[in-house]
Length: 316
Image 1 (cartoon, rainbow, N blue to C red):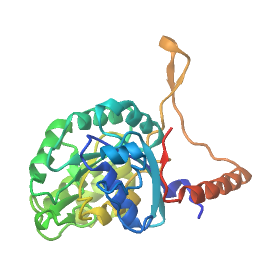
Image 2 (tube, rainbow, N blue to C red):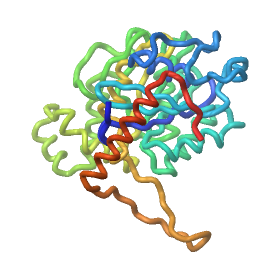
Image 3 (cartoon, one colour):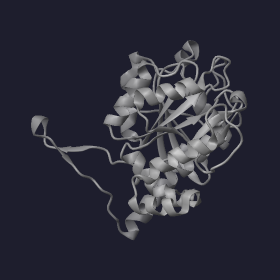
């Protein structure tokens, strides 16, 4: 089916090797119905690690492109290697996306590649989303990792959901103001904190919020939420387990409803001139003629049909 710009999300899964990026991609593909069942790293049946050497080593060597549809939204996803030896292959993917999804292990916390990819994504002006994976592990320390994330990256890193039932599920903190008990903190406290952070970028909404309190709807918060992402005023944090599937449906909803589309993300940096004389040029989308849009839509349809294959392709 054809997709408009508003219906597209471009994301890159980045972070330390062993954080679970490839299995997270697998879980998202399976939950969305793009593949019949989740593959296994041990059996060498994952979509993204299809190279024989990757199967033998049990880790990614290059960036791989795949995609799926969720809630009428097309998500183009790039799985990247996490070892420092292949840093360049991960960095090049940042030029193709609006959102960097930094995957963090709930067991190991913030690691060197986590820090490097976070810094690179910030310097590139990308919207960022942190996903804390492996919350089901016996060694998981989700609360400590959340504190560590805020200490290392800033107090504007706030949870959109929280682990519950000992890491067997998650409870939403953004779309609802109340919910079942979380493993740490509380839904109401997390909800209030993230709403307060979002409304700070919009004076009119802040005034309305002071009048209405919790009655502000997610629809009212959408534009300031995107603005907060663009302006580095907010880095949302989500919890999940790619192994058990806990938090994966919620992550799909977040990508569809809250991740920026290409028109909402910060435009890529363009330079005019060379060397020391190069200056940055502001870029904004322009409206094209109906015939151009029709032609583009036709090309988009063919491209979407081609990319719908479950086979993964390498990023250039």
